[in-house]
Image (cartoon, rainbow, N blue to C red):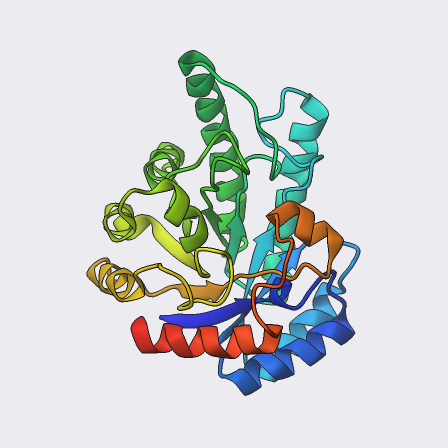
Length: 282
């Protein structure tokens, strides 16, 4: 098991100069992995960024950013096409950066909510599985694994629970499509988080870790020791990545509903979170 941190902990958007500073900080704190959000593909020179990450001795994962125009299940065809092309480009970017894992809610734009009856949901999920299978086939050619993230009910209507995520991944039925489980979303949607992890089993490719308020792991009521035992039970050997946010960046604050500081200091969040995760999971 590796431990990583998403650069959103410190802000957005990311440039090569910012990445150099953050990789130094990430190494100094003792992390193994840095996770890079792929907000806009023009923001970051991926070749130069790859060299920065390599020089720091870090592994890298990437996070898809499903903006309003990127949506694999939107009723408007142009948004579906934009979403699929964005993800193909994100797969390429991940490979260029030297990573093998692209994670996130890679099905719908974050925050889009809509009502579905049972028939509409079945149709939507079936069509989504076909699209994700095609993307997974492409990802396999780039040695990249897609990890689909269930989000809570306030951020999407489609995939909320671990059970729904399992059903989707099983429907895709491709080794390059796995699950990302996030402790924040699980705390809202899964009745028993350790049991949900055990049910995901071999499908788990990635974990996002934060407290129940999206703050420092270990400061809330999430049962980390029980999560650690569940991860051991499924022989999880992927990355556990601290994902938290700052209200200082308006776009992030709105997307994640972060309206106040979640820690006295973002560096403190990163250090204390890693110490807690290594103590309880590692």
